[in-house]
Image 1 (cartoon, rainbow, N blue to C red):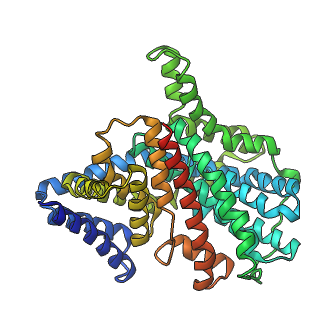
Image 2 (cartoon, one colour):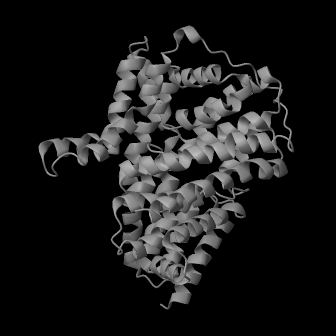
Image 3 (spheres, rainbow, N blue to C red):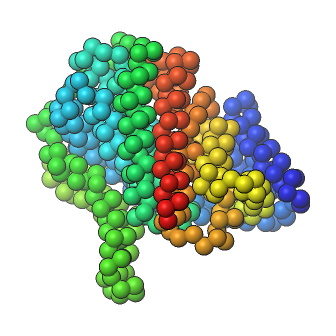
Length: 445
């Protein structure tokens, strides 16, 4: 088919997905599967190729993500149940003081959310923001915006978060460079979108503490040490970083090189971290083996629907690739004169605005650009920089089709208009800042 027809197929598919999810109220998994089939049919794919492509897309996505999500969910749940995450948050608040508590909340969100899903991290940490707002007697907006910004920055840019892990895997990015560039994007993004913007917008939007929120009780005597808690959160990152740094100083193909590659793989790193959390923290603090089993089982149950929807997003991405829609749209955008890093950001942002999910926006953008950039011979470091550009675009301009939009409003009591002025602007600042860092990193390589 000609390029124009294929481009219309891509745009129409995304618009249809938006209609099915928002208007027809169809479940995202079913909608993604239907739209994937429709995109294949309208792009001229054979019936047999459509089903084969769908299977390939689901398997290729979940083959990596299922292990990361399952182990990461267990790891994060153990850290919460043992009080490790609470210890980090409490110590940061104590160190910064109440006057600078909004900075502490941003950092706490950034650090504590590393092993968690966005919504899980918010549920676990929102009580700290409420406690700070109660003690300071200030505007709730000034405290919750930094917390949400920190959690969102970790979820978008930092390994071992599920979306950055998936994005780096799909883009064939170097995981070590993904960590470095991700940190360079997340930290300034969190500071600008969190404490700084939160202080500004709190002068224009005021929210009171919800009346049904009780003071959180934290038994400090039973918490693990701050140093050990922080070390556990950072442990998988250190293992992944060893792979990249160590590989520069060892002979490729040697026994040491192979061990570094093995230990630094996300599967191995998160598995080891999970085992350390279970046996070095939970059981040593008196948690029974039955309780550990219960915690781990409870951790992975909510991940099922996340995996299904993400896998369906992978199906949609693969159909775009194999049908020729992806190459056509990618070439059309690049042919318009946009640099590749900016094109990655713009495409991801467009898909994000239309359908809402950051993960699906990342997967769809990968499907659109990989057929083009995959042949340009970019290094793993350059692919990591482009991955950060895509991640930045995937969180901008959050509105009513994004679950995070409603999560913010639900917890803070903000109206839709207030959520647009606060949450939506915060996400846009964060995503744009991160993408700019990615563009700068790409231009320097």
